[in-house]
Image 1 (cartoon, protein in one colour):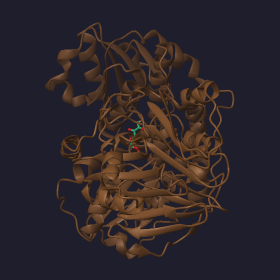
Image 2: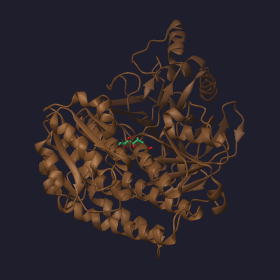
Image 3: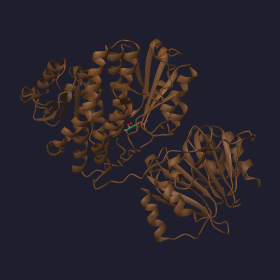
Amino acid sequence: MCGIVGYIGSKDTMPILLDSLKKLEYRGYDSSGMAFLDHEAHLLVRKAKGKICNLEELFRAQPLPYTRVGISHTRWATHGFPSDINAHPHIDGKNSIAVVHNGIIENYKELRDFLKKKGCKFVSATDSEVIPHLIAHFYKGDLFSAVKQALQKLIGTFALGVISRDHPGMLIAARVGSPLIIGIGEKENFIASDVPAILDFTRRVIYLKDSEIAVLTKDKVDLYTFEGKKVTPHIDTVSFSVTTARKEGYPHFMIKEIHEQSSVLEQMLALRLKNKKLVLEGLKLSDAFLKNVRKVSIVACGTAYHAGLVGKYIIESLGRLSVEIETSSEFRYRNPIIDKHTLVLAVSQSGETADTLAAVREAKAKGAKVIAICNVVGSSLAREADGILYTYAGQEIGVASTKAYTAQLMMFYLLALKLATVRKSITPKASKELMDQLLRVPALYKEVLKDIHKIQKIAEANSHFGCFLFLGRHVNYPSALEGALKLKEISYIPAEGYAAGEMKHGPIALIDEYRAVVCINPQSHVYDKMSSNMQEIRARKGNVIAIATRGDHEIKSNADYVIDIPKVADILSPLLVALPLQLLAYYIAVKRGCDVDQPRNLAKSVTVE
Ligand code: F6R
């Protein structure tokens, strides 16, 4: 994963890199570092383990001279644990060439052995360190040529930034697989892993393509293929803006984002259900195509995958269309059976998840049409898909996805309605009723939030449990998976989600008085089945926290704690169930003193396999 920023120009480099790098912290935050060339072309390298604020602290303690070129990196460890030594930039043996790398060098072991035999000494445990040594190995006075030769030897994914003491007026960048953009300024140029990182400085960008090298000076940018053929750059002017999110009085971004969900959904509905008419701008597929689609295939990872699982139930139920779903990392290597009659839905908050991007490329290569459901405007996924349905949930800073998830769910209801309408599997009356119910959801969120203190108390009362199970049936089976994921990622408590009917096939062995079991059981056609499962847990002394429909008094006899949600149609319940699940996870993690916005080992955007 990791994030990269580079600068070449006339301004002081460090403050520019620091400002931009902080905007990439969502890509990793276990360590960070920068390399600069000063006016005497000395290579200055600074690194710090931990978040970028630690690096900032280092600059305060050891101020740098004014520099006009530099590269920087925020890391999410793949090879080698987080430490100053494993942090980027990495340098060659002569302290001459510095490299920042996002991606994985798969053949690093062979390259390392080869370079060791040539006398190179390695100091880190990273795959990335081979790159500066390899460039140095090929270097005979021409940096571009040395980088080009080194690139021929690298196998894997990478976005690179390279500077050299011998070429203080030059910054070289290259990519395969990992994203990299070039920012064009006035007598200054930039490289970055994404556009928002440099939007404060320029709106003119080049999206570097796979197997392209960029040579930047302060006055110009030249592009080449890896073979050295010159390429004419295409400069885009970015029209979107990114506002810097603030906590606005909330203790964490996560709880702020949980609260925002009502207005996110309200705005989404205002945009997409204008006068009860579906407006799916960006879909770019004709009704004729949608009518004749033979199969829907959903690809996504993590929380977005759980939204996709709910989407499967919704599309199958409303659109009467067969839906497959798979995590992107499995889909991409499975040789999936899809063709031009398949509609592939790629779901991603960031639009930068490497596995999902690879799955999209696989689907497109097989002739399928790909529609992205994505939050980040202008992301790689948005650019690569055939159509894009933006969720417009706003910037999500908390690493644990909350508002992006519920916005994805809402988009699935709207898309399913569209498919059902085109395919005539829903009557106009039922369609209108569903729209009316959807339009009521934002207000219902506010109702659930009225119980926030009660949910907080329930969370705190159960925060000591060392293991949680989350159970649900039918459309809330994915809710159970999502509830478990939310809890484990921010509290580090082992938590598993199951389809409640599967309990008796194994997981029930886990139940005793030391387990907490969250049972998602709103009124629905599987209510009685789920109630039986709850009794089975109580019979084995499990502690039950139920999520149930307001007014359900019967449930109290099967549960230690009950969290109410307002009554909605069965199929809409995942939208409402999400909120107490998020709050339970949040308050348990806070009670346990965890870093909820930036949990250990995670990153907001997973840009490596
Ligand atoms: C969990 C979470 C992750 C992401 C996953 C996919 O709270 O946020 O599981 O959902 O990494 O990320 P996107 O949606 O950006 O593709």
